[in-house]
Each structure stands twice: as C-alpha cells, then as structure tokens.
Length: 117
Image 1 (tube, helix red, strand yellow):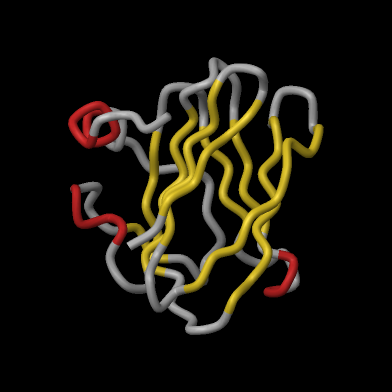
Image 2 (cartoon, one colour; image 1 turned 60 degrees about the vertical axis):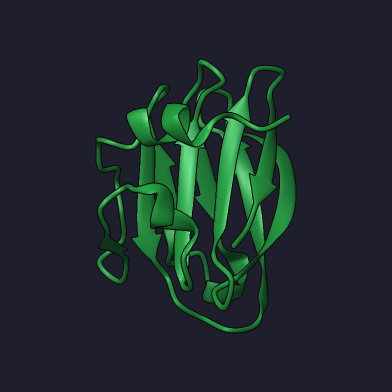
C-alpha cells in the first residue's frame, strides 16, 4: 500500500522537533534522495523515529498529519525504531541506509510502511 507522491508532498510542509545534528531539507518528491530520511505521520497520532545506532541522538518527533525530511547521510544499514508518540509504544523497526535514503509513513493501526530510493 503506497500513498501517492502528491499526498506525501502535501503533508511535508512543517518541520518537527529535531536534534542539532539534523538538517531540515525542503520536502519534495526528491526526499528519497541519497542521505535523506523522511517521516510522515498519517495515522492520526504523533510519530517518532529513533536511531539507536546513532546513540538516539537523531530522534525525529512529528505531529499527526505532518511530514519532515532530514539529511542524515550515512552509508551503512542502521536500525530505525518507529514509535507511536501518543502511547510511547514501539510500532516496529526497519532499516535506513543513507546511500539510498528512506521514507517512513505511519498509518492507522498503528502501523507503518517504508520505502527507499
């Protein structure tokens, strides 16, 4: 199940709580570019993405209905924990590799889907 790029782009207008190490980039269809991580919260709840391999320093928190994109770089596989911010419950984990970029979209359930490059 994939949401259209138009729908994703429409929700990518706002920034989120970010760590100082992360850089916000314009939200466009190029968000799946090299080194770019995008998180969209489409499930009616706030969403969190944590990067334990980075010591949790890059943690992304966004409100429901929002998206944000960050230049995280990297070229190895890294675990990403996806969390329902409203209940603080782990939804699941996936892999991010900066050499291809990644987009994670949280959906009702709670659940999520991810795609890259």
